[in-house]
Structures are given as C-alpha cells and as structure tokens.
Length: 214
Image 1 (cartoon, rainbow, N blue to C red):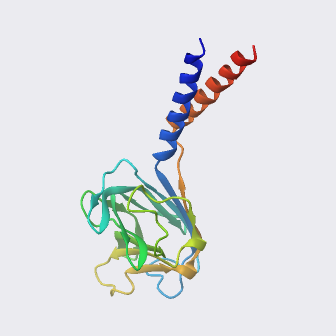
Image 2 (cartoon, rainbow, N blue to C red; image 1 turned 180 degrees about the vertical axis):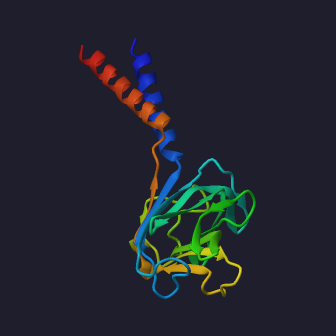
C-alpha cells in the first residue's frame, strides 16, 4: 500500500531534477555609454539591456560550441531609443580563457534601431559581444552558462555597429568595454511549466506527508 506514495515522491524529485537542468538563460546588463567610442550614441548616457540564451538550440561541437539562432530578445535602451536583435549566433570556447561571443550578422539574425542624423540616419547593422572568464570557469561547452555576474568576468566588450552613408568607421561604432558596465548577470529563467511542475511536486510531497501522518 505504500508503494504508490513512494513512487510518487521519486517521480516528483525526477521532475524537479529535469526542470532544473534545462532552462533558458537571461542576461541583464547596465552601465554608461563610453566617452571614448560612443559612436552615434550620447556619451556618458546611461544604458540598460537584456537578452535570452535559448537552451533548446543544439550546438555544433568541435573545439568550441556554436549555437545558431540562440540569442533572442536582445534589447539595449539608451537616450529613449531601443536597439534590438533576434536569432543571434552564440559561440562558447574553452581555451587559455573561457569566452562567450555573440553576433547578429549571420544566418537568420535580424537587428533593428537607428539614430537620426540630419537628412541621414545611423542604422543598426550588427550587435556583437565578447565576454571572457578565467580558463576552467565554465564546466564545459554545454549546457548554456548561468550563475555568473560582472565580478566573474576578466573581459567584457559589447559593440553596436551602424551603417551610415558618409560617417567614418569610428563614428559608426559604439564600443562598450569593461569600465562601461555597472552590472552583468547570467541567470536561469524559470519556465511557467517548470513552476507548475514544482508546485505540483510540492503539493504531492505534502499529500504524501499527510497520508503518513494519518
């Protein structure tokens, strides 16, 4: 008669373990636009943003892992303007340093955003980043990294590249390096289904406990 509650408890813990393993990762960041390479953006203006790393994308593996279309919902907001990207390419490499790099210039990637400039405009052409950690910090090429904040990184770089009919290359690039950032965090995102499973598992364990007490 006690086999069913015991099996239920095992299933509940199995579900929780499965849910904890697979979850998209949300990256949040904030800081101040650099006065060194602000490009078309306002120097010393605050910025904030975020993007999602999609854990359902299967990587190609060699000495590094490449996740095509794995970066979604990228947005950087500054000066009342949003700069967006979807379906970006993520690469993870384990070498003399562990690094995470991303770009929105390949495959199905799209970007959106512009800065007016008289009769012309600076039009967003690409978003790229390079976040580096000490060698051996990442447990491997998979799963996607989470649980890091700005203090864990040895190098931080984020670039917004713009097209413009007359501006030179320097003026078309907003380059944000380590000192530009106040925050940078990688955290798993709980899915609604995962929350439901956790609540169900918790209720099941409570029910089992009450049965035993009775």
